[in-house]
Length: 233
Image 1: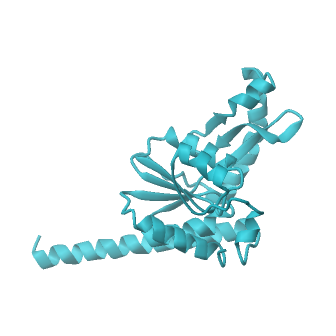
Image 2: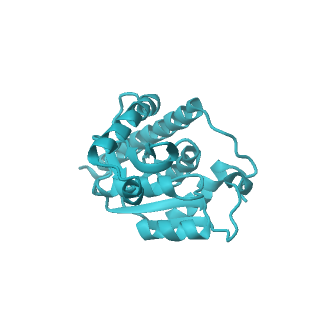
Image 3: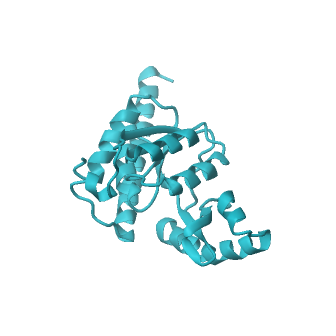
C-alpha cells in the first residue's frame, strides 16, 4: 500500500532512475496520474506534460469505447477495431461519433494547456504515468497514439495494476509496475490517502513542475557559464 500518490511517484521515480534513461520525458494521464508523474519527473529531472485522452462511446453504450481521441497537433484517433466491427460502423458513422466528442477534448485541452502545445516526444524516452490501471484501456490508447509520434522508447510506469492488465500493457510497451496483486481490488484500496483531484489541483501541480524545470534550466545555464569562465573557453 502507498501512503498517497506522491509516495507512489517517488517509489516509481527511484525504480526508473536506476535505468539511467536517455532524454526522458514524463507524460501524465490526468487527473490521478498527475501527482504521481510530478514526483517521477522530479526524481528524473525530466520535463512533465500531459497526455489527454477522450473516449468515443459506442451507439447506445457510451461506456464501451469504439475509439479514442488523443490530444496532439493534430490529435490522433485510435480505433477499437473489434468494437467497430461488432457495431458494423462505417467511416461516416465513425466520423459522427468522433465529432461529438471533439468539443470535450478541446475543453479539456483549454483547461489543462491553455495555448501551450504538447511537448514533442520525437526521439525521447517517453514515460507514461498513471496512479494505477484496472483494465488499462486508456493507457493502451495513449501508447498507440504516442507510437505514431516517433519516440525512442515508451515506458509505462504504474504503482499498481492487476497481473493480467500488467501483462497486456507489457505487450504494448516496456513496463514498470511496482505492485501486481493477483486479486485486484478497487484502486483506492492500495492507497492510504486517495482523494479525487480537481482541475485546479492538476493545474497547480503542473505549474509547480514547470517552475522547477525552469529553475533547473537556469541553474544549468549558470553552471555552464561558470565552467566556461573557469576553463577560459
